[in-house]
Length: 278
Image (tube, rainbow, N blue to C red; front, side, top):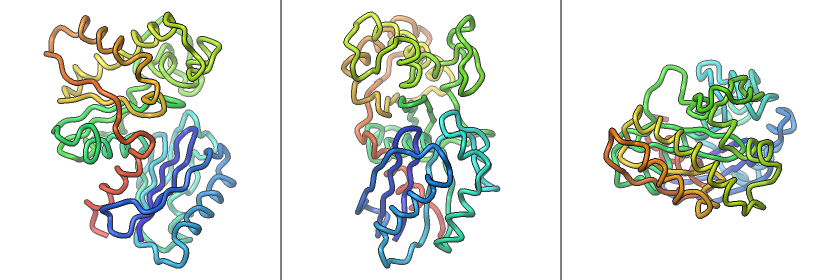
């Protein structure tokens, strides 16, 4: 049995697969911000799902910048207590199997590229908009190589903007386009907002962030995932119009919502393990 973990800023998902072709069971619960009770909840879910089955390998997607050799995250804007904790060592000690640490958005993008909205395309650009904003470039059904990972949420969009406490940057995309920023900037939760002006401003900033990714990554398709994809009817059409109006050096390409929703990271983990020698 294989275990797939997806620890995001808001929710944690634990799933299993017997054959790396399908996902059998999924457990979902609010992410615990403190490491010790958080990892205990993860263990409880793994034991509930695995029961008496031997675990062959685990892949863990978690938000932040990673040190994969040490099996730790070095920085995570929304999971401060998990930083520098022995996450991989903890899981290896308990289950005596290989444990792979990856960025949660990277696995989400991989899931969409292999099983979801991007499966017919070679180069996929992906943004996950939820508590924060992450992104990744997928090439030939693999997470593109990088020196320190992909963090498009922290590109500077508004140089005269406010300092964003989670990362310390000024006017970054995440400070303008994310669940946390939405409430701080507009004083309302996105699920309760019907104000067209607010969504228009949101769309403009998102479009700028997408344009920057398009000219740098040059993908065949761009996919919007994360929790905000469920509200895409409120901003996606405006976003595409702004991209079309302001991106003049490239021809237009599809910009669409995720097909896998909150299961994208689990499906990405499924494919990730399938391509590894275990």
